[in-house]
Length: 181
Image 1 (cartoon, helix red, strand yellow):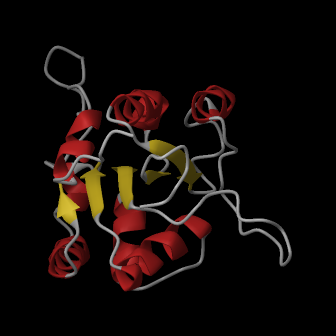
Image 2: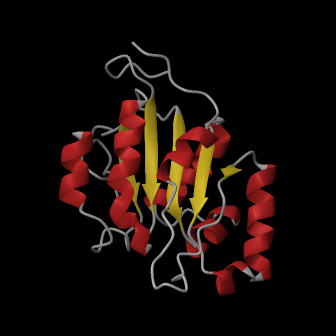
């Protein structure tokens, strides 16, 4: 466990999906469960998918979306766990293939090698989820020990609304709760 105020450190990886606007709910839930939180976003997610200023204020840390330059201090301690929410079709497939072309993907790829537990809440449209590459990616990532919540299609319901995104489920998937200081 890292020693940031005596609390374990959780990386939250945010991808570009409409529900990303609610990521503050995940941050709040993690903080209530005594996690210190740092957010890493895909470059596209940084383009207006969530309120970056509000999340930075909530975590007290900058959101990371790009690599730091050599010599710059590390803005986050090493993770004790990682949550990917919402996780998109693109991110899941690239991660399973070992692509590390963004900080978010490199962090996910590295987490496996470090033995860090990872929980994922997919947000993938049914038509994309039917693609064989996606199914293969889920199989590969599950084989690596990645824990998945129920898929969230994000498609409108017959009444025009959308189901709630179960942010807190990601924390439940981690299985262990951090110890209180």
